Length: 254
Picture 1 (tube, rainbow, N blue to C red):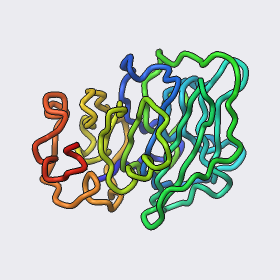
Picture 2 (picture 1 turned 90 degrees about the vertical axis):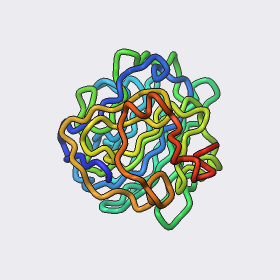
Picture 3 (picture 1 turned 180 degrees about the vertical axis):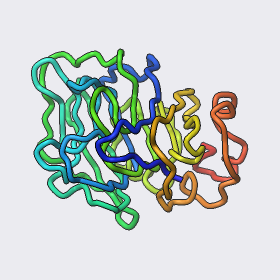
Picture 4 (picture 1 turned 45 degrees about the vertical axis):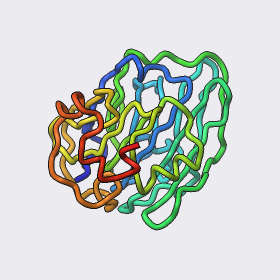
């Protein structure tokens, strides 16, 4: 199952603000996203920000509701990249990999679908300038957060990494999502219904659902392979970051 977020709502999943998530100078957000509306501009998908967009924000661009953008605030001008007009397609599962690196530059955005491997669609990348803004006071949120409202969507997977993954690694995660050394959050949204959303990275950044409802999941098979054994709990994740059933999948067992 995925989670469904209503357009212009406060539907959200709050993953907290652990120190490891705060003010990441470089990072990557990976999502399987199914937009259900592009009627309104500037709606949030994933963020660690207040209404003034402090930390990384993956959202619909204000100028064109059919364009996705990554935005990370800096003191003078923002570190940002767009996906190009029309990069958000309604009622279609899409995979996005958004990376940033405040120190070395080069924000990027990759996009794929269920039938196409992710490719770089970066449009107007801007390194920005000035000190990175501190986002430690804000939680990591899927959906509406930080005073902004949610974009209408289903969200099937969310990963957050503490490094800017290369395109090849973003592609490896597309159809076989799995935790790696840089993973801070790994969540298959909706598999626990609307209860606590377990973080399978082993870091315990579990999510709390407000308003979102259960919807059909991205058709990858659970964790990128068939044979899902049933529901799981956040408690099991904290105690055992790699559940024994993962041993049946060589990729997940790495």
